[in-house]
Image (cartoon, rainbow, N blue to C red):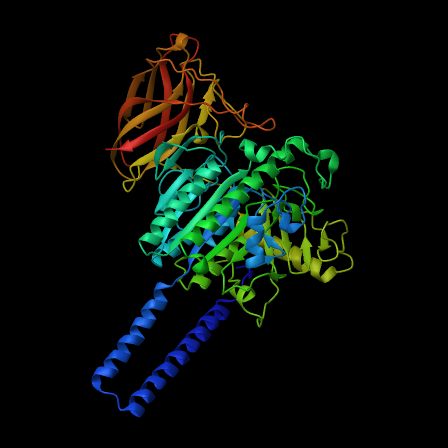
Amino acid sequence: MLNIVPSQNHLVEMTRTNFKKLRRESSLAGSRLASLVITQACSARILFALCFLLVATVTWAADQRPNVVVILSDDQGWGDLSLNGNVNLSTSNVDSLAHDGASFDRFYVCPVCSPTRAEFLTGRYHPRGGVHGVSMGAERLNLDENTIADTFRAGGYATGAFGKWHNGMQYPYHPNGRGFDEFYGFCSGHWGHYFAPMLERNGKLVRGNGFCIDDFTNQALAFIEESVKQNKPFFAYLPYNTPHSPMQVPDRFWKKFDGADLELRARDTEMENLQHTRAALAMCENIDWNVGRLLKKLDDLKVAENTIVVYFSDNGPNGHRWNGDMKGRKSSTDEGGVRSPLLIRWPGRIPAGRQIAENGAAIDLLPTLADLAGVEVVSKQPLDGVSLKSLLTSDDYMWEDRMIFSHWQDKVAARTERFLLDNEGLLHELDKDPGQRHDVSEQHPDITRRLRKAVRSWRKELLTGLRDDQRPLIMGHPDYRFTQIPARDGVAHGKIKRSSKHPNCSYFTNWTSTTDAISWEVEAPDDGVFDVEIYYTCPEADVGSTIELSCGDSRLTGKITEAHDPPALGAEQDRCQRDESYYKEFRPMKLGTLHVKKGKGTLMLRALDIPGSQVMEFRLLMLSRH
């Protein structure tokens, strides 16, 4: 196996050292107690009281486990913070995490969304968990992976996630199956509308309330407040979905940027879409406002001193805009595509204003946070990440240089503390050349050979067979009531078309023939009986089609009896033109009851009769277990 992390012996030794230190301190406390008893000739009652006091003190210490809040922004580049020198915007609340805590100069994530989320959740490189894409099942995290939420829930924490999940929709890929007690948000990679859209709460579809980032924050604040009321430590994960497109943001944040001149521009100025940049900056300031609300809530609840707050982004910027002259943007393994801010605040434990030059990565957050909180990592698989605790809390530490790998599609880059080997095999000395303008492979042939060899080994170990993904969708897990089967995960047959090349929030249209169909490869873990709702649109002139849903020998038929022809939404709220589908308010219709047998099969939706020009536009099947 490729040696890319410190040896297990090193980790064991660290654990042994910590245990010895604890044992020494306990022994010292015991010796002092014994001495006090002998010296004072205490009575049995006093001895009992002292022992009780000692036990109570230990119990009190155990109850003071720190809370954890992790904020993950979406498509926000390293340069999208005023902390990092961007005078185009102000992010004072996010910046305060660095002023009051620690910031990493070089922290690395993945080039796109779902891989970074998988690495944060597991502490392992995303290919190990089967994540090789961003939609149609490729974003799912293998079920033999344990998550950071599993670790903190096992440690006695209340766990909640609020926002964009993007690592699987159908239970047990769903957040509720990955260690989170509470989930509010959406599971796809992007969403088509940010103002009161259709969301879900623990599998049940609900209507969002206002702008989604504000809404997700409100839900997280309520979760935090309830956890404090219950006197339970909390692990709150806020995976926001902005400044990812569509570029929508409330007016109060847009007014500042509408038509504004921007002092700092993209490295490739001619590639920059200024309207897109303005919208992204406005969305970043909305995030900052919400971070401010969250920090205030921690203060109001008097838990700020005992709460670790983490802030980072999932990849580089989703457009050409100022990013510190770094090469690359989202989807690139170059610096601009994978270098993210990482800010961590824990008052009194992490020194204020601490700046860390050593490299960190998304794979390090699970072991770091578990180490800081003193909870045991429950992962069954070996981690690629390492704890950054010593960098955060100690002035006296030994830190070994290591390689950090970045991957997307067929591109792989490797980094050490000093060098970057890019996906073309060119070597760059980052301290002297952060813009990757000069290849120094000839000046450092031994380092170049070593990094190229490491990349070949990493490719062989992690990428072999990665795309041979035969995992079916899980339909009707017996431990969960709801199963969403969206158009996103379906395969269209005949002349049916997807509303966008981006599947995540798309729907199917142009369904005009009885030879057309939509299918999903599924697996039912057990027999089940399910109420089925179908989410559709259909104009008055086309009402009346009879449709059939089948899975194996089970069949269910129904008829479209009511017109529902809503307009496409989004253009009026978009601050610049989008690439994705516009949004529609699809109506649920009860289709009937489907009996499902345990095993694998094909779920098929087709029309038996089409009296009009089309069947319908299709968005979603919702199955509810009896």
